[in-house]
Image 1: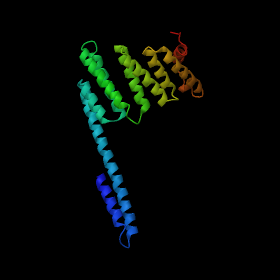
Image 2: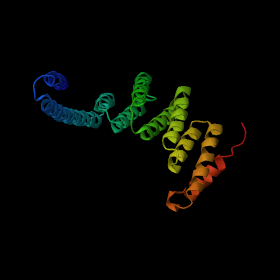
Image 3: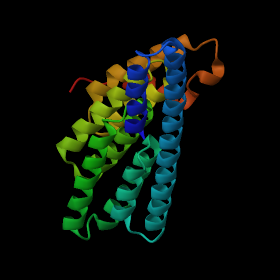
Image 4: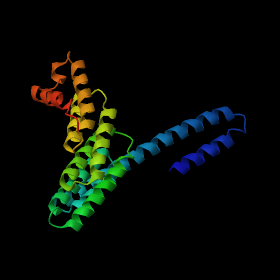
Amino acid sequence: LLMVVLGIAGAGVAASKHGARSSQRSVGMVCAVVVLAVLAMFIQSILQLSRSRTYEQYGMKMLAVGDHAASAQWFVQAGEPRHHAAALHGLLLGFHQAHGRNPGDAADYETRIANVMNRMAKLPTHRAQLARSEAQASAILYQATRKLPWQKRAARAALQLTEHDPHGVGAALLAADLVWQVGLPQEAAAIYQRVLMLNDQAYLDPDGQLSPDDLARATQRANPLPP
């Protein structure tokens, strides 16, 4: 359809060079091209939305029957950030079922999870949401496997979360907690200090401030004992 639009546009330009009414023809062809271009974009968006919903439905069906790998594949094909998060969720379920029982399957799930995360890194929107999902999943995998790549990935994604949501007290607290959970207290301390700063800046919005328990935890961990 796009090629048809471009062809019409070229024909219109050629036709506009001849005849006494070239100016009127040119205006008419431009209007036609604009209308067709808008129509093409509309049709493309409808088809993409239809495919996305179909893939999402397949993903839900596979998840319901416990086929986590197939479910993740359909969710990733659906394409939206929330679908990638759903794919991570399903793969984590599969990993937990295989961990300690079938090391080969557990390792396969780890590979699939890393591949989904790599695809998430290329998505242009919802960066804070995607960083949150990656950090949480990586922290879970590190706590289960004690593998350093997951520790590093959790810390990196947590920092990205604070970059994409620089004013969010809750986002900063989650990032700090995740870095702490993966055994990096010194790195977490810097984020907890930022949490306290953001909390102080939110004094005009009490609902946006930390709860007493969260504040006490952040205050304690913002100044950890030296290693």
